Length: 166
Image (tube, rainbow, N blue to C red; front, side):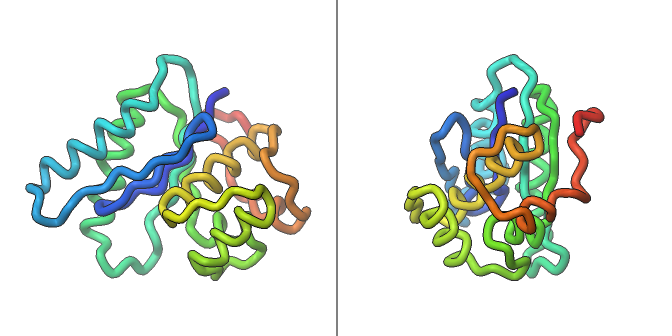
């Protein structure tokens, strides 16, 4: 099964699929509809017609810009629905603990974990999160992309794959 990692954001949505990562950026001066349409089109472009799993970071519990972030999440979910994807949402703390062992890891910690464990140096935090989300999806499916300590992997015990594929 194909797995795509998505870190939704109105300013920079990170997407990682098939070993390549990209960021969809929008500018505050663009009309909101144009910004959302760009995110929708980019996410939709990763659909290939076959069943696939999209792993996306969930909304932070106490987001300062929750309304704007929610718009990006909504348009990403709509694109994934239209693409026929199975969607797994992951709380930010769970993603961080999976990648680093710390639920309160910083962006720098996430990037360093990627570099130390896999040798990949992505400079865009959105892409780093998307890479880890994709790896988490493959881990859930039983095809780990990276060798992590058992405590990191045990963080995923509370997650359930959509469609009963756990």
